[in-house]
Length: 368
Image 1 (cartoon, rainbow, N blue to C red):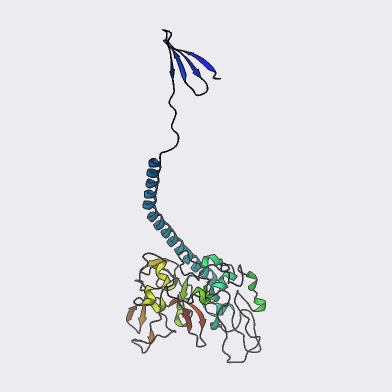
Image 2: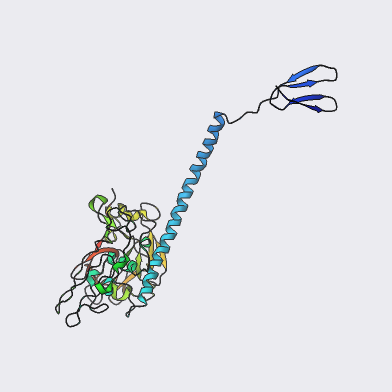
């Protein structure tokens, strides 16, 4: 049964039910009339819903490219900051080095002295056989100059390169800082003790880092594994003696994004390189370069404008920073046969060092 409320107006009396239903209207003449209130429509029609969906899809289509570009720009900025931080850590390290050198694994863990000194921390010849990329970055991480995550660029695209411990094939799930144990002649993860005694004239010995790896030249199904993104000037010859120091030289390349094999820019080594995917268009290499004064430049060329090499007394050549281009033939010119002992820029990662002292660089395997 409906409950009726009595409502009056100047010319009409209405009884309005509380519950929905017809409304009886009484006029002054005594007649009655039932009025059925209109029901409110609920929800949307199918057409309205489809229109809304179409508008949302259109907006997403317009915004996604701009969002992707903004994300790429953010990654580029972060990459430059990370490269700069790594070099700053190296410069801090150099302040405690007697020669002002940036870190070199072979100077951190020197080779054994001949008798009667033997194996003593901080003494002995530089063990150049350990001056490779995996040992270099692992040595800095072991002394907590930066973490394993800083070694991986936010623009990294090679699938075998990721933070140490994140790959199921890594021997450890996290970096073991107890590996820094000078009393045991180990200074980082992947380091191995030198012989306890050697003879006069014995050459240093050393192997690639089997834990903090740089096997970027192998595919995932070929045991490829890389724990760092950035390349550095090779630690050999005049590059090591003059460039790999805290000199503040704004024209000397120290490190940066990886490039192509031997600085190639014409063959498949260029067009199929993972490094073309780091920044900018996917068909052109672009990347960051860190110089000796710690300023970072964004370059679209393997020949940065202020990077050159002097051959002889007065010949200046543009320098491909990813290639060891120059050798020495005479006082006034450079031979066409590269000499790893020269001082031109040679930015790469190396897995091992030959007995001669020449770094053996590794480059990204080619994309399909």
